[in-house]
Amino acid sequence: MKIKLTEQELASGQLSPEMLELAAEQVRVNGYIVFEKVLSDEKIKTIRDAFDPVFDEFIEKRGYNTGTNRAQMFLPFMEPFNDSEVIAHPIAMQVIGKVLGNGFHCSYFASDTPMPGSDYQAVHCDIMPLFPELTVPLPPFSLVLNIPLVDVNEENGPLEVWPGGTHLNPDNANHDTLDGSINPNLHIVRAAEGMLSEKVFMQAGSIVIRDIRMWHRGTPNRSDYRRTNLAMIFNRHWYNSSCHTPIPRETYDKLSKKEQEIYRNFRIGQPAAMPWE
Image (tube, rainbow, N blue to C red; front, top):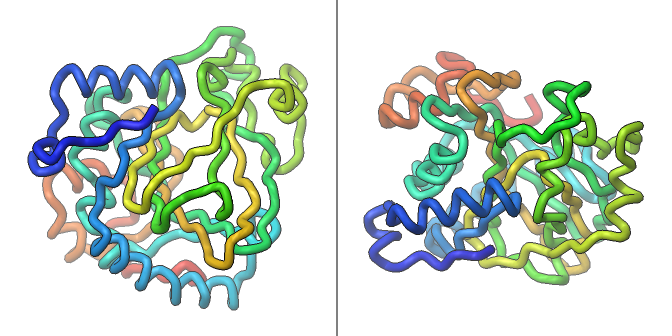
């Protein structure tokens, strides 16, 4: 589902109780929600202009790491990447808080970029099961937030998702299969071939929030330019996957109280690091 925010909602950074409930409901039941065009063109251009040379140097030094002409790259916690509207947009934080509860935190600050010539990924979810022996679905405990730096269309490698319940499989059926492994309880790649999917088209500066367990894959980028998503992962307060992103003390001290709470498990007090370091 896509939601177009009103000018009042964008200006106030607040959803009405009814809209907040609808957005959280979509994440819980359908697996994801898209807020169309939240960040301004000017802000996205500033971030993209800073991102591209960093990414080019990363590829030169480290190469592609998530498939043909496709790379995941951690972001340095510095301007313009740590803009408040990126790391803690109030509307996104409202929805995440509604789904995950108080005390949620971020554990991942990165990007995903399929370049021209990239291929399909295998259908996968992004996480291993919490309790592999369980044959019951669990509530959401980890959410992914994406912000595209360019308009996403059929040609430039949109994310393809299998919504409507794949994130609600019994825990033993959720399994990270990106490396080609097969879950003995459910063959995700084979099952997905006969299921309905949809590609997530959206404008640059939109915000996507999805359950980390929802099945998805990257698709080929047939355009002549990279299709970058900024990517963050937010968890319930008790779930703490390791985070290696350093934040200089002076940077952390300038964050709002809410942002400090959300990024409390980063490596505070260490110099910002470039992704190839």
